[in-house]
Every structure is written in C-alpha cells, then in structure tokens.
Image 1 (cartoon, one colour):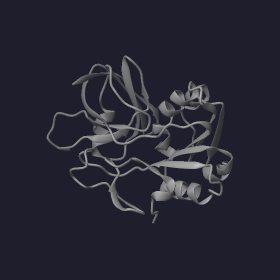
Image 2 (tube, rainbow, N blue to C red):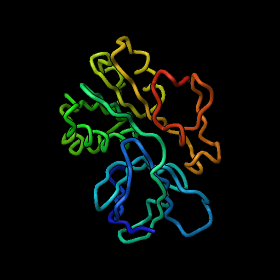
Image 3 (cartoon, one colour):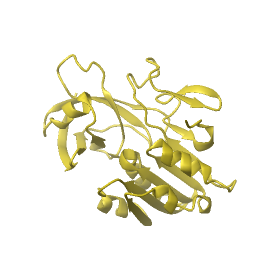
Length: 235
C-alpha cells in the first residue's frame, strides 16, 4: 500500500496521479493500480508509467469507466495499491528519434523522452502530440524534447516524415499507428508501437488482452505492450 502525493484534474476528464515511494520501471512499461476498498471492481487498471524518480512514480489517466472514476476520487494521503512494473517497453535507440502520441498515448512518452534526451547515443528527440480539442502538458514535453510539434483536431501522423528518423516510438489510436507503419519506406527506420488493450491481470493469465501479430496471437500485457510496428496485423 502506498500514499498518494497528488491526484490533480488537469483537463475535463484527465488526471495526474503521483504516488510516493521508490519503484522500478523502464520506458514503456506499466503498472496495475487499485485504489478502492470495495470488492468491485475486482481487478486493478493498467496505466503506463508517465514519470519515475527516486521518490515517486506518476501516471496520467482518463476517466473512462468505473475503475478510473474511483481513482479520480482519491485525495492526497489516501492509500493506493500498485503492482508492477509489467510488460516489455521500448528498446534501446540511437540517432534521430521521434516519439508520436495520439490522445492519451502521450502517457507512455514523457518518461521515455526524458530518458532518451540524456543519452549520448541520441542525436535528437522530436515529439509529436495530437489532440482532439485541447493540448495538455505542453510545458512538460517541451523540456524533454529538442522539438515539439502539436496538432489539434487533425492527424498528427501526417506531420511526421517517418523515414527521416532512425527510431519511431508511438502510442495512441490504432488508426494513427497503422498510418505510421504504412509510411515507412526506409530500411534504416525502426518503428515500435505501444498497444492499448483492456487488461485484467497484467501477467498473461486472464488472456483478455490478445492482439493479432504476424506470428499469431500474442498477449499485450506479457509480450508487449511494445511491438515492432511491422509485426502487428491491424484491423
């Protein structure tokens, strides 16, 4: 059980949750969070690591159902359970890197950008963020990127020259990630995408987060959530 430092509403249905303690985790991994005393919902909810330091871990989440609505009621000093880190995150990168986030897909990219920007093997980190109506967390992302490109109401994938980068890390709507993969022309460009799926356990036991790949069905929680872009069979 851990203590909440803050659980601030940063947009109409989006919250910034910060929890005290020292936790493990690498870029692109996630935790299962459970912050209610009732038996229902039984299982926690999966959230990507937004940020991590020696004293705390942070998450950005949107209220979309009963679990996330219960989380949004929590206050400073309330108790919360978290389990993790789970999943395979983004791989090591070098050269020119672009991070592309659509909507809440940005949640897995801030920690990733912060870690990348201080690595000597990284030439540049460009961040592309797409929003439906209003941009959020712009000040934070500006600090961890060499260039930040924002799109509101359009298609952020259309603003990226995919083949000019060595690595592309993306998270967001599947139509966005499908468009990114289809733009690839250069063999040097390596694309990795983080899938978002409903999950029950986070460990690969409940089989609820299956995704279709070129090597057959895999589990987003255990085999991902990050996969090579070309491996995913988009609908």
